[in-house]
Structures are given as C-alpha cells and as structure tokens.
Image (cartoon, rainbow, N blue to C red; front, side, top):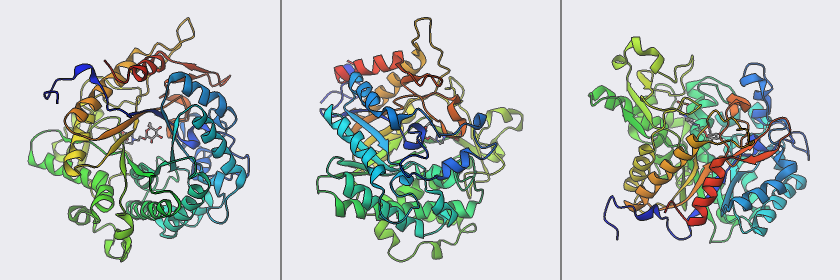
Length: 473
Ligand code: GBH
C-alpha cells in the first residue's frame, strides 16, 4: 500500500461511481401535469415572501419534457451514475392510495434512457416535496406520515425495482425537520422547536419503514442508503465552553440521525439537551428504534462547508457580521447558547466558507465511528456568480478549484481507509435553489432561464476529463 500522505495521481477505486445529482422539484417543472398535485414546496414557493424574487418550480428547467436531451448530455459528459429524486405527488398525489401510472411512466422512461447509455440510476425517494395533502394533516410532525412514506416507497420500488438497484430513502432529513419546521426558511415554513424534533423522529421512522418496504420489494442485491448533510462541527477555540457548543450541534445536527439509524438509540446527551422541548418518552414508541435501525448498505453524505461554532458568551458582539445562521427562529433546538461563525477565507456565492479539509475529516470521522460502513458522497459542489464569456461559455475556474480540492479530499480519506464508493457533483445543471430561487447557480451545466438552453460550463468539461482518467492523475 502507498505510504500515508502519498497520493500517486489521486486514483480512485475500480468501480467508483462518477456522478451528478439533482432533485425533482428543483428541475422537473410540469408542476400540474400528469395528475401531479401540489407539494409543500409548490405551496411555499407560491406564498409571497418565501423565495427570492417569488421564484417557483412551476417550470424549473423543464426536465420533465427535456429529460432525453439531459440524459444525452450526461452521457456526453461520461457520467457513470446519476442521482435524481422521485416526486411523491407525481406518483401518489394525495399521499395515499394507488400509484398514478403516468407519474411512474416518467421515471420508467427516464431510467430506461439512463440504462440505454450505461448510466446507473440512483433514486432518492424524498427530496423535500411532501404532498401538500399530507402537510394539511400535520406533515412530518405526525406519526402517520411515516407510514404513508413507507406505502409510497413500496409503490415506487415495485414499479422501478427492475431497473433501479440503488435507492436512497431521505435526502437531508435535518433540513426537512429543522429548516422546514424549526427556522421555517424551507417548506412548510413552520417555526416550532418541538414540532421540528417530532418531525426528525418521524423522518427517522419513515426512513426505517421505507428500508423495510424496499427490502421486501427489491432483490437481495439492492443497495439502500440514507443521505445526510452531516455537519463537520468545529469549535472556534479550545475553550471548554466552545467544545460544549460543538457537542450540542453534533448531537442535534448529526447524531439525532446516526444514533437511531446506525446504533438503534437516540443519544443520551441529545435527550438531555432537548428533553424540555419535547417528551421523547411519548414520541418514541416501543419498536420504533428497531424499525429505524434496519441495516443500510451505504451512508450518503452531502458536504458543502464546515460548521464553526462557539459558546454564545464567547462570540464578540462587535463581530456580529461574522456570526451567521442568526434568524428569528433557530433551526437548532436546545442550542440557544451556541453562536455560529464564518471561518475567514474564500466563500462561495452562498457565503459558505470553502474548506475541503472538512470533507476529509468528516469521512474519516464516519469511518472511525462506523468502521466498514460504505459511503457515497451523494452531494458536493458550489454556487458561484457565473457569467458566460464572449464565447458563450461560463469559465468557472472557481468551481473547478472547489471540485478539484474536494475530490483530493475524498482521495485522502480513501487512502486513510474510508470506504467511499462514489461522488455525485451537486448539481448536474443550474436549477431552483429552494429559498434562493434561480439566483444561485450550482450547475456544472449552465441553464439560460429564458431559452432553457443547456451549455456545459468549463467545470463540466473538466469533470468529464477527470471521469475519463478515473481520477486526477
Ligand atoms: C443541499 O442542501 C440540498 O440537498 C440540495 O437540494 C441543494 O440544492 C444543495 O444542497 C445546495 O444548497 O444554513 O447557513 O447554516 C444543503 C443544505 C447547506 C444546509 C449548508 C446547511 C449550512 C450553512 N445545507 N447549510 S447555514
């Protein structure tokens, strides 16, 4: 084996998946076609003041009608895999009852097209677009939604299981629970710490029940994952109060999911931190943890930036502008005494500090805590202020540098023993960036929002060369 620190050409394991990712509401459009009914993101984005410029996903980048062109583009880039999500309200409009065949037909056609080019489809069952009908009944704050999610999962797996062998249940349940029901910056826009914690448990339960439904419907060779936006939490200083702040954020940001899913228990410190907000004894019923901890085959990790924290008392008021995440309603129940900071240095167009060491550290932390657990980078990428040059091409050297450094970070983790099986660039193409609307561009492929024309950026061309070589060598 190569000595530690030596990276001969930054090679990646044979069979490593070189992919790109998207999500249904961010790209599909066709919001009212084929029997689809509104999701919480349709209602939220159509509510004045919720998204930048009042942008919605009504049309998005019209992938629903242009998917053949988009798959050809993926093939031209040389992607070996593509991660996308299924729109629950396109498949099961009210969140219960039989599947709508026209909805399933779209995903049958999409996956057939991918397979015809030899591109492996990876389907995510839930990337934030809950049928509004279920939200009207309480959404993720009520237990019944977990069972509804399992039923929908069974319908999707029965219809697509012959062509999709890798599945992820939820994308970033932290965002669904704490941005959706805590800070309210995501749909459904509710702002209750107690409801957010209930949502987190019901998302975990939904995940576990969905794993059961997938195992029942799919062949034994199927690969089942959960995608988490694990926070690489770093204390601002070695002051004990800052370490305590980091512990709290690790608990309610990470271990609230990895605890029950991978160890079959909620962490005692999380329960202590949040026990005054929610009654865990009644929330978690007998048997829930057995469901939630059904074995998964892969852990999906979405990484963008580290999370730098201190005790609030250690945050200098004069440096207020450096403290972010400050909103009227916190997405961090039980952590009111924690302050969030931006590390000095370069940031993306989102204002997120660029630090690839966070990805190596995160992968190695997971590797040490869960030895042998295979991982997928299900999202990594960056928004920049892209401007097409005179040649009509976006020459995004900043994005190439970001991707290069993060791929090196992945290679370093692999070299140190982490079992990372693939990398999915976020995102294949520019799309609806949630509360930021179309103002932020994460794509490797540029989308002209007037003509909807797709044009690969320099980063797409660079990435296709990385794929062709099997690494950075
Ligand atoms: C992912 O969310 C989503 O899965 C994807 O749909 C989205 O388009 C993409 O990333 C880009 O945003 O919130 O200021 O404290 C990532 C969401 C980003 C939430 C980092 C936590 C921490 C910075 N996460 N964020 S802040």
